[in-house]
Image (tube, rainbow over all chains, first blue to last red; front, side, top):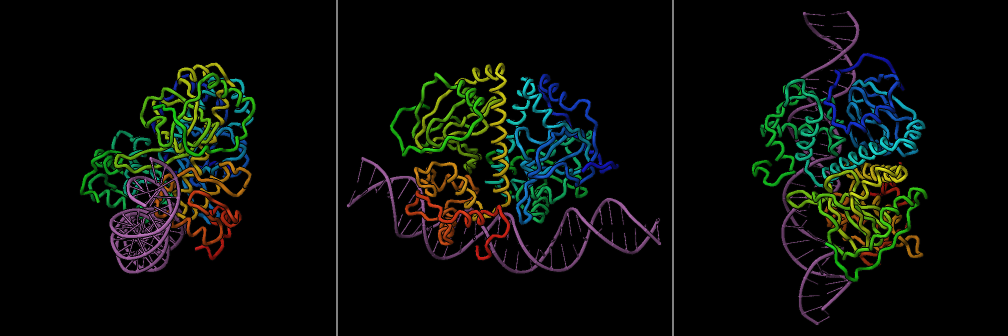
Length: 238
Length: 238
DNA sequence: CGTTGAATTGATACTGGTCAATTCTAGTGG
DNA sequence: CCACTAGAATTGACCAGTATCAATTCAACG
């Protein structure tokens, strides 16, 4: 599964704020593990595989997917550097993990993690906090998929993604590492709808895309209203 | 928020299997706490409220909801007896909790839970396992909401619910504690669609409903195929 | 019984999906 | 440096699955 190779544009993201104590514990899991490299679209692990490892992403972006037998795909989340891959406390992976861009990551044996959990309270607390955070994010996404329109989904997602990704000095501008298909499968719509909806957001003046993968948020407040999380959306926004 | 009152049909569910050690730890949180009673549709806590307590459900069913400012609602999950309410590790509740039926529950202060987490490794491990379980369930639901048709959603949900609820000796028969609106908001469709889709499932012979709230699963295999989690769905199932 | 909210049913509208064609973009090799 | 290619993205025409709106029907309860 692991390959060495130069790879796509190095995606950089800001380091999330971690409780210092917990961070140190998590680092302990992966310290001394060599950094492995995967190119875009390679598989880290597959849904249903026995969960023998956990990973920490060092660089790049990973998507987590669930598949239906007929090929329908849901991208249930994305993983950014410093975050862990491979949920603790499961015999098999409940989803696949694939490199969106070229990635670098560290690997650790589940048996070793289990041992650390068995003795290190601080680590276990930190893991609990991290999983709780992910659970909240998933629940937020349930609201999006269950009740938001395509336009609200896109607006919500673009805000979220822009806040996650690094800006290289330009606070309103990001290079999207994802394809339209990834976005579509994450938002529960089709690529065509993603395309058309992005066009509408452009026409509203909320965003602009000098090239298909360079996003500039022109009007945060407007985009926020279009996301539907606030009352009083602009009446003309249909 | 708390009221005493006799209440709706006592919903019974089978006790989930817990790791014995972990269960004991969890019980410690709530032991000696009085059992409180709420009637149907009363609020346990509200989205955004400071998270001062955690709860353990003793009897009945609770729904967890997220709301949009314009009133759209997503039921992000249901809670059954022995399960905990109120995610650890958050300053405010990220969702509301409402009694679906009359319920009985125990309450414990968050400060007390935090203290237990700070010293009891076994408890923290158990909580971690429980939250991981919930996360997997949420991700499953993301697939449902993102990629399944209304028919697949209903079939999936009815199987899941029937496995959760107690059968009183009739293995294929349950009394639904939920309204059509609860189901609709959980599956991301409207009440009308729930109604029509249930009718279709009846016509296929997968289920029957002698009364609107008494569900009998007539053909598990068929309902399973209609849920879409298997290949080779019946061709006539449109 | 009569009342009220839940559930069902029907008619119609519309969002977003499907299918097909075209354009764009980033590589690749001459 | 410039075609050529393959996959990604866009666009258009049309359609299907659900939503919406409105009207009954049903069931529980006083």
